[in-house]
Length: 113
Image (cartoon, rainbow, N blue to C red; front, side):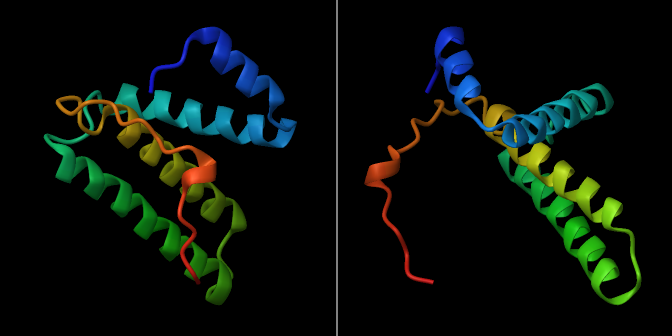
């Protein structure tokens, strides 16, 4: 779903300040990742694996915080990297496939937990 600049700006303006700060951190991490690694894997499977690898590092950092006196900052940094790689995957993960149109929130099926 492609959105014009005006629509993006209007949606961003409605977000709480804290959400905006996090999104900016994710966007900055995406920029740094692109500078270091211009492509995100050779195909969609490798791109997905990159997201999973970052998620594994987040789990490791959380375990260290919980059980090994690890630094909360490190866990936070890993969480930002997971979000950034997930964002990058959505943007670049499968350029050969059409951009998906996300379902409207009211049509989403809620699964029991």
